[in-house]
Length: 69
Image 1 (cartoon, helix red, strand yellow):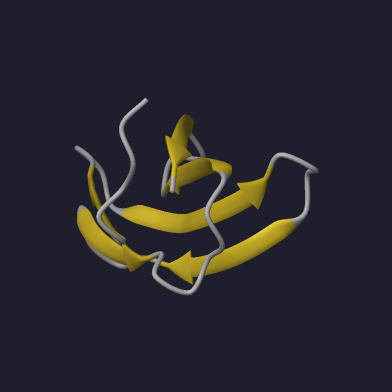
Image 2 (cartoon, one colour; image 1 turned 60 degrees about the vertical axis):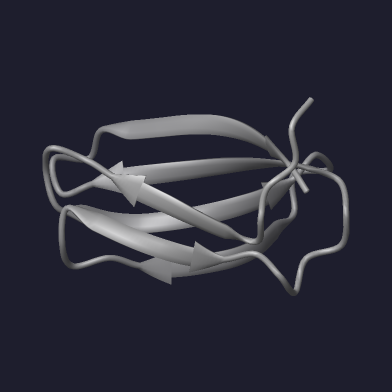
């Protein structure tokens, strides 16, 4: 599996409402509000591991992706 460089770039067709990073335990480890169709979230402060990133747009559509840090 490839690891992240520490910055996650998010691009959507619709404006981003919320980006949330979860540990595999289910705990929320980072939240970031969005106001545009793209955003960067900095992951440098997270410990190495596997995380789930969920992105919700203004239409309440949620996208989820697994990342490895």
